[in-house]
View 1: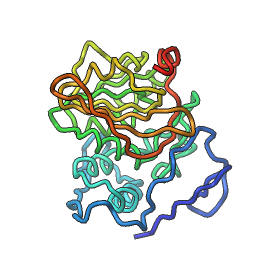
View 2: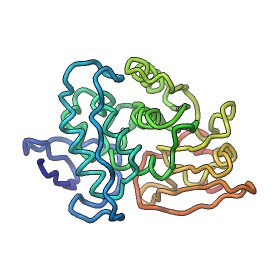
View 3: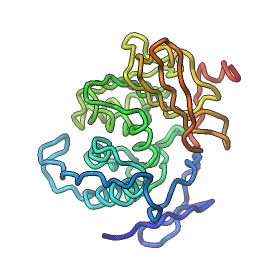
Length: 277
């Protein structure tokens, strides 16, 4: 199996053939542990099954399957992603379907990629980490704030019962809705709107994942968590963001802790009008 090497470049990224190309202009997540580092758990996750023919994709040979397996084995399992459901979902979902055609050669590299409208698709490790931290289960109803291209929603759809996804950029919401429908994700509902306010009609949620950074924890999202449920969200201004977990307690209070430095696009809309709350 080819060993992947993570390289940080200021103005560009290195392609698989060693050529230098322009990098996306959107902010990139902070460096995460390299594949050479030991995972945080000594228990090896179970072997993954190959997605069966006739799943949400057609029956043609998956040209990206080898890359997807390498992504799971070298970017995720060698770090701290050990949840079998998350690893399987990351193997099943074709990230190449969620990136622009010009970037499909980088679909399984461990980096965010531009998707238009000054937005990005998060790097695979961050998607897996946030999903694992949210502790999503098959019976769960999940809120996904910041649909983007729909990749995070697709991963959640593989694990949970129902996903409600909100995207503030109407064009992206329309594109993602069509893409998810085309790929057969029938348990995802996408709407255009401001994710800062959540989706109260379908609350409470068993998990909430937010892919844009406000400078504080949105109170309406905390209200929409079910008792015992978790929200995973980046908090802070550019250059000082932290990935946080917010867990709703039985008495209605919440417990919060930070996980790792990250860099997401800022949350817009109502979040901008409620800074420093």
